[in-house]
Amino acid sequence: MLLIGAMSDTHDNLPMIRKAIDQMNRAEVSIVLHPGDITSPFTPKMFSELRAPMVVTFGNNDAEKEVLRRRFSEVGKEVRGIFAEVEAASSRIALTHGDEPDLLNSLIKSQFYHIVVCGHTHQAKSYVSGATVVVNPGEVCGYLTGESTIATIDTETRHTEILHL
Image (cartoon, rainbow, N blue to C red):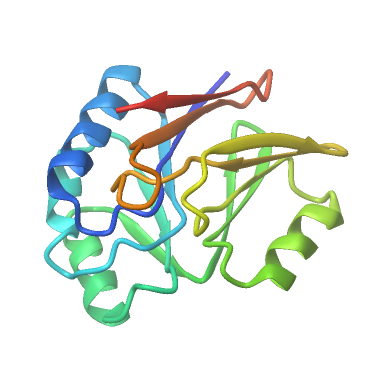
């Protein structure tokens, strides 16, 4: 069993990012997946406090991609691009922001992935589509919904929990 953490749409909200990191560290997640919208190059250094490895994909609001990639690398976190395939405890996981509906729908419909993690809508939700669990951890920033959320996913049971910060 592996516990995965997911957070999205942080949008430079540093106090809420700190809370999300603290929650992930307390939960002792094995890896954190972030499907984008970090936004500014000053934000990645906050993630140095995150004890777990992290894989990040870009969102539609991430402009300075090469600078973000370099800054995350400086704190030991990995940025892949607009899509990442992650293997965790025999689970195939797809990670993408979700602003490309054809890509997101193809990943889900393919049934190749056990878990698909996305963001973009800022709406926290988890559902099952065939053999695939789809998880949107919502928004860390809390700007659109007024709720700051993250998610954890158990790779063995595929149980997802949405956590309020």
